[in-house]
Amino acid sequence: NAGVTQTPKFQVLKTGQSMTLQCAQDMNHNSMYWYRQDPGMGLRLIYYSASEGTTDKGEVPNGYNVSRLNKREFSLRLESAAPSQTSVYFCASSEGGGGGYGYTFGSGTRLTVV
Amino acid sequence: RKEVEQDPGPFNVPEGATVAFNCTYSNSASQSFFWYRQDCRKEPKLLMSVYSSGNEDGRFTAQLNRASQYISLLIRDSKLSDSATYLCVVNRRGYSTLTFGKGTMLLVSP
Image (tube, rainbow over the protein chains, first blue to last red):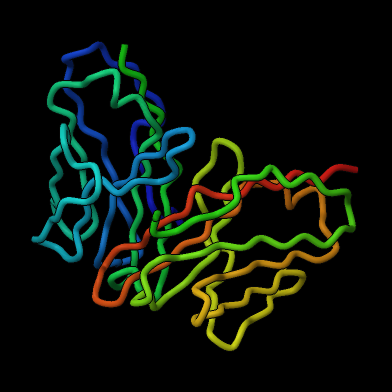
């Protein structure tokens, strides 16, 4: 019963490098989300996908791109990493639009950009 | 005004104490409410949904006051294992995303 799986768990990047954070869910959920969490800032929405084939910007999308590869997978790409993107990244999924169902989160990716 | 506001704490309480957290939300169109729990360096996990009539789950009681736009969480008989950050979460009608408060930290000591 995996739920939401994120890879990698830890990553160190140099400024300017690119990388893709992977997320997969096995609960047949329609909606998927990427959040970042920084000290004192709480969880902030980067991008989300309400259903397969759609993606939308959240509160802090600059510097990121996403791909909803299929119903199970939703990836987050940093094209040119910056130190300001040092954060903990959480992927989440929801059965519906999140309104009545809440989210299930992955265990997170701790990213450091030096 | 932030959409969801919580006292960051920390709340330091002894084992067995009763502790209450409040959360206010700014958008009257908010329709769904939750409390999440987040342990240090872990992902948030759903603790309970909050219903208009109030609801209870063991030692935890959640209340919603729509008129005053606040949500509360009461924890009775605190355990050491209750030490965590508690996140207040709301969903606005017609939106497919949740908005998280910054959380209230609880520390339960022996």
